[in-house]
Length: 370
Ligand code: AN7
Image 1 (cartoon, rainbow, N blue to C red):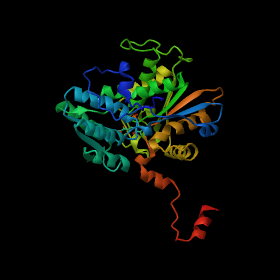
Image 2: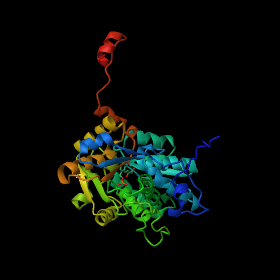
Image 3: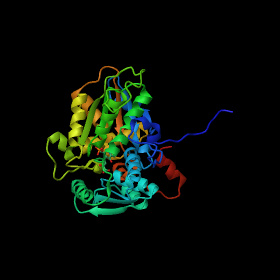
Image 4: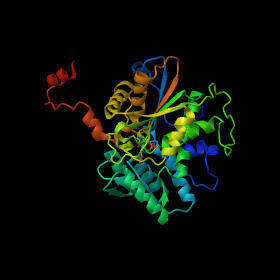
């Protein structure tokens, strides 16, 4: 009899050697990570050149975004450190993830969200998981400032990406890409909001390839890696919320991609380091470009993402049409950060509405085009 038992493991168990955990760390997991890295042949022809395009679909995580990788670490460490409560400011996905992992761990969870600026799916998740949801009159940057003030003065654990365990967990996405491809990509395109994720991927690529800091025991763990050169990190902000590109905080950030509607990113400096060390760029994409990529992903690749997630693909399309013609057989990865069901309003606004028809087969067939 073949042994067909399915083994589930989260990112902590899978990459324990690379993470700051010990036998004493209780592992709070929803089996996050191990997300699909999909070859995107149909989009390759839109981008042009002879590229090999892969999409890292982080919407396949348990709460529907990449935040789960960092949250399993942050919540596990909070429990290990005997914390009783956690708090975050959030454009929605961090809140949904913190609420879910806190529910699993039995921790009290408070989330501060910008009133009116978070997608319905995310809000419903935070509410259903029993978090204390506070809608702040203000934007994300105001919420983060207040949360930092609270965590300085009161015994409550910060689970925003300023919590270093979040970055540690999120770096595992880069590990998975190397494990799947057997090499590092040439380019990595990624949306940038608070800039935690670009920071995490860059750390992950460096550590896994043995270009690591002194703490990493693993030197060249993958001798079969054919291309140890590290990828260029290509970050994209929404044009109306692009503080890193503009070189100054944006007071009133504006974009339909509410997840990345952030005017003063927490990991600003680290994102610039990732850009500069890798020889990459941080640039902008307009809402129109984001929505175009959002629709292409759904219609050409069968992948439904939320608008912010499409910033990576929008960035790739823009870069390849305006800046750099890919000519060789470059390996390119785009991270798709969150699931399309997070923001049903935007989807319904972006597509053709269903037609209402009486119970008449002929009319129905005509409408289908048969
Ligand atoms: C789908 O949930 O900041 O550059 O509070 O939800 O690491 O901030 C979300 C960010 C991209 C940007 N795509 O990542 C939050 C929050 C999606 C996101 C980003 C976010 P970072």
